[in-house]
Length: 189
Image 1 (cartoon, rainbow, N blue to C red):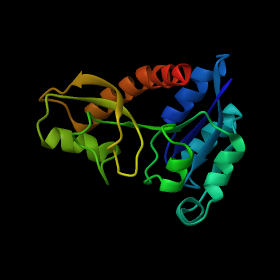
Image 2 (tube, rainbow, N blue to C red):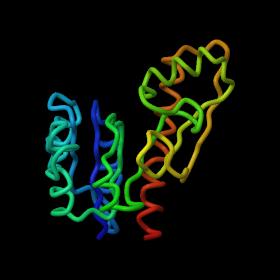
Image 3 (spheres, rainbow, N blue to C red):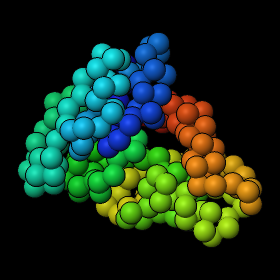
């Protein structure tokens, strides 16, 4: 049984989708959710879904090995960033080389980098008058949104679309593709 740890910072809709997807699978399960936000809605979702969830601060993540030690103790086969907003520290990336992935709400390399998350991305897509956007699932490296691309899915952006319209289209792509891509990665290990 493959073991998945999810990092999230906000509402946790992608985390919940992944948890539910793997609940009835016999090949993998989500064993832990970690968040950098003690008020994140993902904590409530985990409580309802009976999944262990912990919050941590910046010191535990970047200045000590506390988060790394938690990860070492639960031995994940894959670490999935699902709306996690902090840059991942090198000590974790080195220990879990090619085992950390992220989902980004745009077609990288466009609209990536520090500060490009959530509605900031969708507003930039509208401002730039893009005709398409989508999601990118990629490996995480030491730079924001620069790791090797694993998968992309596209959707049309109409001239009448608002940033909220784009957000809804992206959410649909995430819900459909993210669990399947995670499963494929786990099966290929």
